Image (cartoon, rainbow, N blue to C red):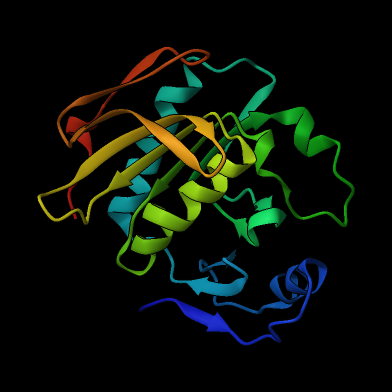
Length: 197
């Protein structure tokens, strides 16, 4: 199953896009995101995708402060880049979520200290290009891209030091390499246990 886009009028504003996003009725398990101003429905993640997310999440729980959370269904927004995403993992202080009213369904992406996206066939361009540009623009300090669909074989890339819409590559490798997350995490993630697609 590939991504599906929802029609909308080009002149619609951010609030209209968010309303369409909120009202989009997608099959259970699918993700609805706004990518570059287009409401997009993505299929449910594959099992191997979920195993990778779970592995990273378990590692992170050993080092994050007690008042932070790791979320797999948190909607983060970057209105200035016409983006509203549901990353595979987002690490943010719990206070950022508690402060939201019941009617608010997303937090500013800048609230996240760390975001992970794990590519799937339907999200390659978004995870490799659109989302890192938006996350960098929002000032998310660390972005981890787990790319099981890279041409030369599965890769993992840690981005940091965002400036404007661009990240600096802090570390890149293949599945099997260790990726070291800097402070405030200061942990090595063993990618050798990641299943390949």
